[in-house]
Length: 83
Image (tube, rainbow, N blue to C red; front, side, top):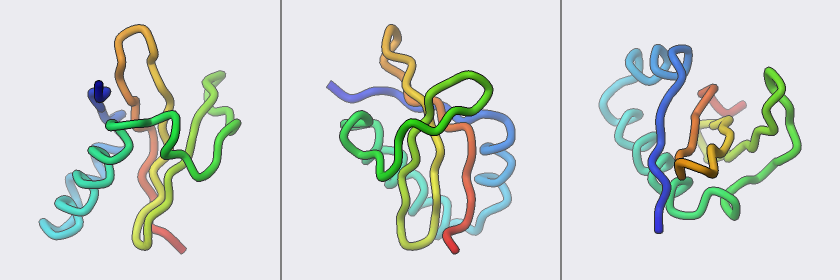
């Protein structure tokens, strides 16, 4: 069963400022992560504000998130353009 996902305010601001094509790519990436978040991470063990976070990279984006296991939610805390 998939997880839901939510965006922190800072990630939402980045998402909102994106062009439609970028938003569509990000939504697909969020959905990919939500299907199996524990297996999708490219990097894990990163700690932000006391939370163990994971990072998923695509050709265009770097998505930082943590898992809220009890409610099955992916909490997206940062969106950055890939270098």
